[in-house]
Length: 275
Length: 340
Image 1 (cartoon, rainbow over the protein chains, first blue to last red):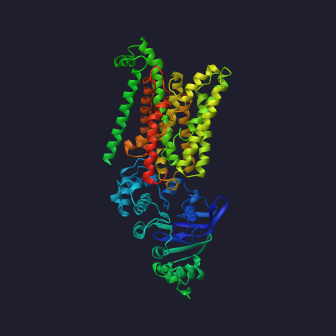
Image 2: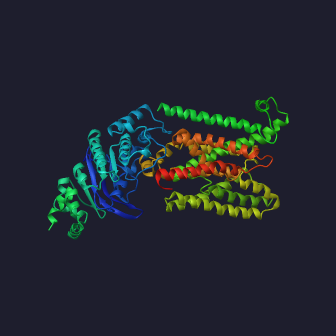
Image 3: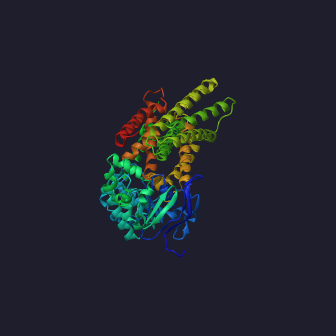
């Protein structure tokens, strides 16, 4: 491999069964960098992430981790290189946050999954990095959504991956917890030199946190590049199909503020279209 | 950490003591009461001629061992199903799996007994296992269509009723001489077990339980949901298949020898989880076994002695203790999660 990307996809086509949801996906993720997928709902972001995380077999093409095809790796080997944080809430019974985080040591423990001192140390470190140490003995089902996602992030870190895949990790969170989670993530990426591939709904946050943004539309990579390259002209309106008619009708409904003020990005982007 | 360890150890000690005490009381109590001293003498081997000896060895001991192993198997089977369906009130009886097993066993018994052929223990287990798998297949089909916990349970209960109705019908048309046996068995009882059965029950359930215990690591990961488990390196397909096989073998074994026994599979794992304050499979699998054993010993004791000489079916007793626990789980869950 000539380039030093940790994750690389080649001619990737993803979907369920024979139904292709997205194809021609070429992605690169590098150490210490964040790649973010944005795009409308149903464009195939989650499916792409699931395929990268090897939860879904690609229909065509290959995902490489450090130059090695994922399909040729053993489950345990892959689990030590890649971990995930999903959108869905999980509801484990009678589990403390500490136990949830420690479960990230799964690929490193023996047949019965008994933790060594080293495993506990790694779990402690993950808790400290993600600032959830005080939640160690709290019941996982009784903490807030924001805390839960932080715990899941700590679990993912505890797995000591090279690659972190996050599928809309901020979806259920309020703005404070969105910011909190993403700033912790950003610090982690620097400290642990992780390669991150994630999807985000919040384009403004994506703009600020990402090193590379990949825009997915109708199952294709529509555009990719740095934030400056993507957030140019009225591209975002184009990506999300925000046409003049919608802008007008939004204005008519008194929602123009939300286009211009609340979402600064859209304001910045959609300026050119405003009559 | 230390506090949890103390809780685990004391939990196991409590269950072990409970089981031992019930074991001994079961040996003592019955249509003829035997004193503790006599029981000890018999067990120690210093008395092998008296009537106490034959009562204990020929009647009570096999029955008690059956209650221990089958009760344990049943509650572990329930725990496996609860994890599989991520549903706290899943269990072999509630999901109609016991009834499916009962149906096939009844047919096999009627068919062979009617031709004067005795059905071997292994044959009974095979028949019960076949029935379990048929019901399980049906439940899996439903669970693929709905995520709703209540739908799954309702379908399971309905399956149970259909199977029981067909079984009753078959029993009604069976030969007179078989009816008594068949009827007793189809109500659920440990009374008919002899040493020959024990020689099958103990190895089969032990093997399945040991295999199950070694699945506790992937089960723990599975409690975080399929996606996370897969990401941690669990082979989900193989794991799910194993879970289904183990829970079916365990509950089939129970149905083959004791008939359908209600609610143990739901109530015991739940009580045990609360006692230990965790749902960790590595703790709860052995604890469920001990708890199920103690629970069935207690229920069998009540079934045998309370209205002696009339013997109750074991399900009558387990339902009295088990059903309220199920109701409690439903209500509690409704309150905390807002969904049933």
